[in-house]
Image (tube, rainbow, N blue to C red):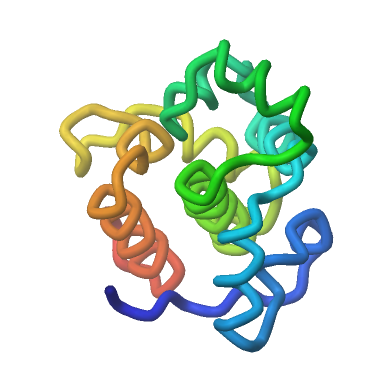
Length: 144
């Protein structure tokens, strides 16, 4: 797996302290322990999407989300997928210099993604990597 581009400090990065960890071992340990349930709600709010849409993107059923709410944290694989989407959302906020523009870009269909929205396309790791590459190109003025 390739390294991702570090996120710069921003307002929303504080909502995901896991993504600010400098040592990979800390992030790995956090993912293994499981993210707190509130990260889902923070991500949903950041993206401006429904719980149904976000559960679909991160591959968690509504009943699983309900169980995790009772338990207080997500499992390792679920945590990983939530952080994947959070990272892309925060990257989009950086590139588009604000939440509103990032939300629009993430949820609107993209021709470069076969008409899927970047958010939906990022439901797999290869899809997320392509969305990240698109953000990098856009950041450097290459139309995608």
